[in-house]
Length: 388
Image 1 (cartoon, one colour):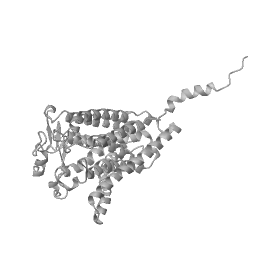
Image 2 (image 1 turned 90 degrees about the vertical axis):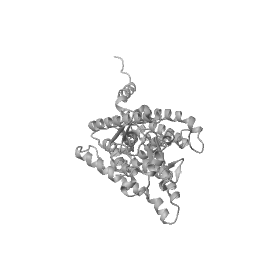
Image 3 (image 1 turned 90 degrees about the horizontal axis):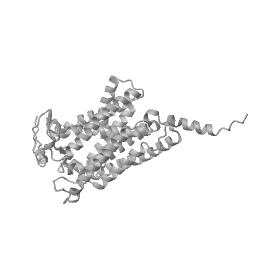
Image 4 (image 1 turned 30 degrees about the vertical axis):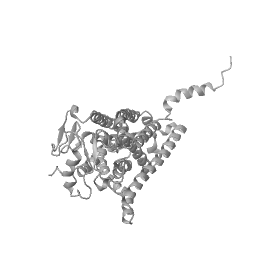
């Protein structure tokens, strides 16, 4: 099968060590030979996070018989693998003219599929999905609200976490966008809004929605987990299709497809933000008024909080290191040739991620821990025994 195309050669000419005829299965590269130090750092952060999330999902299932965490983790990988070959090799599927090659990744320590699919990309979606899912799970929103509200909250947390580095990647040469294809427009400081809408809004929303719909507690386990993973990974794509309908309708009615893409992308983000703020506030008030609404395993669960905190620290270090070149950029291009992203939006996403992380645990009161204190208080209010 053809792997070398003129479009890929043009996109990858500014990347380091990238070959269009790499090993079909896996390629290993010395971290010292990568384009810059940020590549192995983001790779290690997400790969370690991938393993940690899997271990946590297994332990959570064994402790609670809730398999939804496992389904989210596995679906984040399988759903991605179903679409990545199409994105990297549109010529294999006869859609090169319609879709085109939208981006190309730089060379990382571990690459798959002729060097096109970095290991950190395989790790990225399940890690962001899992952390977003477990942060929302910890608030009690899943028990208090329906599957649509729950999925909207997961999608918005995912969006905030992801957008912190989505604008940083091109500047640090993690990947390069193809600005010549139609799907690249309109863009937000170089980030195609069509891509942002599909992969940082509708994809996490779809996976969370189908997972919440399929998985019950206690779960039957075994092959039913495999069934739920496959169904979630397949059914998420109709959700993405539904998300693409509004701009398509506008285009068919004689309007602007580009305007439709922009309006729909920001409308989706705004709706998710409003729903998430309302749900987090409602869950917070419920936890404060009745601590027993949050089951003991969730109130004791700190894994997603720690994961989010570690990620935010790493992201801050990466962005701080990128600021000199960001402010030295000319016409949106940094001195190293990378295209700079939307720093104000990355800061907004960072602050929102931090607030959502805090919002997932603030107000949690542990009734089993406070019981002795309450008993002492009640005993102190009893009248003193009379002297004999």
